[in-house]
Length: 52
Figure 1: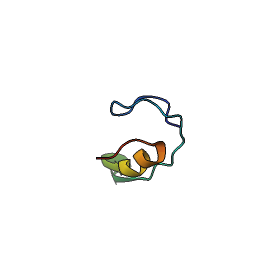
Figure 2: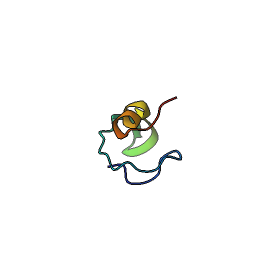
Figure 3: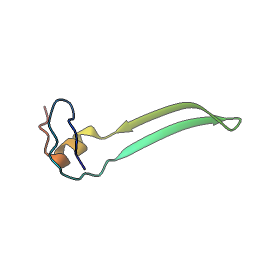
């Protein structure tokens, strides 16, 4: 649920589903590197934020 400000826009109270991916490199049982990305445009549309 969008409860706090995001990129200068006040909360709308709307729920959203966040599509994301993570890539983790594990070596000898320890995390060595981590990358992540999420679909901000989809999130913005779901909560009613304006898109450029």
